[in-house]
Amino acid sequence: MKPEKDTQMIEIQFDKHGLVPVIAQDVETKDVLMLAYANREAVELTSSTGYAHYYSRSRQKLWKKGEESGNLQQVHSILVDCDEDTLIYLVNQTTAACHTGHRSCFYRTLDGTITSERLFDPEKVYGRE
Amino acid sequence: MKPEKDTQMIEIQFDKHGLVPVIAQDVETKDVLMLAYANREAVELTSSTGYAHYYSRSRQKLWKKGEESGNLQQVHSILVDCDEDTLIYLVNQTTAACHTGHRSCFYRTLDGTITSERLFDPEKVYGRE
Picture 1 (cartoon, rainbow over the protein chains, first blue to last red):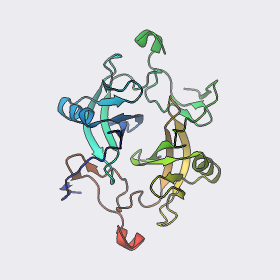
Picture 2 (picture 1 turned 30 degrees about the vertical axis):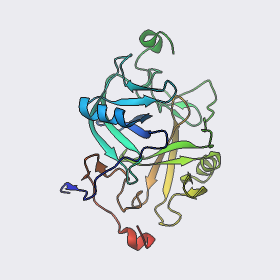
Picture 3 (picture 1 turned 45 degrees about the vertical axis):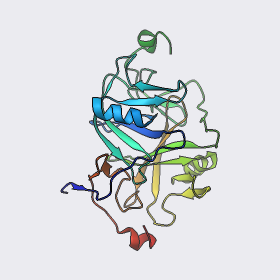
């Protein structure tokens, strides 16, 4: 289809904590890599720098994905859902998204079956797991 | 790789409202269809019936996807992330997931460009949009 523009401006609906959930999806394989949260500043930095930024709820700070591990996410485009309260970052992922060393954080089925192998040893990258 | 079992039991980490975010992903195309929330009962019903169930935060009730529209999600498998606080339902989606008539709720980029066409007229299916 021919791309068309929505006539209404998109206004991201941040929750009462100023956050929106973000799904990081591999733009090539279409694997879902992780779910994290972003505040307005993180979305703006992602747009302006082309690298995925999030907001860590536990550390209460803005966070550039891969700033410690080097496993950056170069952002191809950002999608928004019908309610404008969830985003997808379509990314080119360096090495692996998950701190466990797996490519995706979703490496297990609910019964515990592991569906992908580790791509790096987390102890060597982070000095901890 | 050979499938292996995680030695630790998976225990879904529901938030303080008893909910966990769920990404519905098309098992064939790998398109992300929607993000919704589930409580324990919704996850259990999804597992036992093979059809996606969620919990509506606005209506405060359990919800079977497609119960009104007929656009059911047959669940192929359920994935869990490293922190055990987010799920993926891998689904076979009937017609379209989005109440707007688009296949996926993520049918726009952040600048408002529409990237997919409508598959049904929401007014005919729901009598409203």
